[in-house]
Each structure stands twice: as structure tokens, then as C-alpha cells.
Image (cartoon, rainbow, N blue to C red; front, side, top):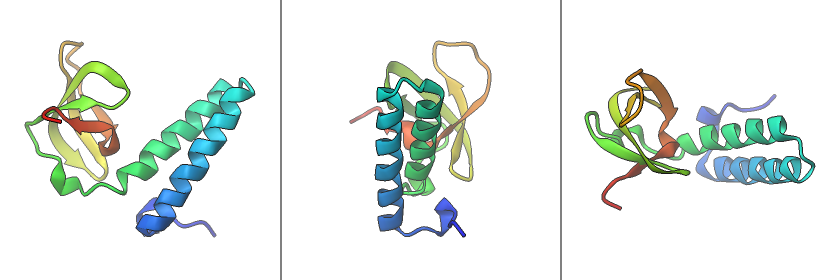
Length: 106
């Protein structure tokens, strides 16, 4: 029986992320892009469990990892997801894993 990400230790999460990224790399090399995308998303979700949600502040603006020049304003948190809006885009609410949020001041 597999553990959920919430039940894993930090080391187990890091091992899982490394395994998922390796599977994603292999899928990309084989040209299986839908499988690549699934493994990448799973790695992002696992990484969200390494971050303390209390470090994400409501009302703050964050850069998006992997998307240069894109910013996200956090309205509220629910679990490991930040709900809010992308700045400069269409103003519809969306949820992003907290592992995609980077401080603007970095």
C-alpha cells in the first residue's frame, strides 16, 4: 500500500520527487509528452508537501516557478494549494500548488 504525500517523511518526499523527475526525463526522451506532463505535475505536488503553508502569505504577490515574468496574487490557501489570480492576465480565480510560488524579493 502506497503512502500519501501527507504521510511521507521529508526524506521519502525527496526520494519520490527524484524518482518522478527521472521518470519524467525518460518519458521526455522517448517523446511521450503526456506521460512527461503527468510525472512533472506529480513532482510539483510532492514538492508542495516540503513547504510549510504558513510561509505563504495571503494578499502577497509571488513569482511563478518556471514562468518568467508571471506573477500570482494569493487570496487564500486551501491545503497545499494557493488560490488567487495571475497578474496581467484574465482575472479568473485559479489554484496552484504552493511549490510553484517563489518570493518576489528573491
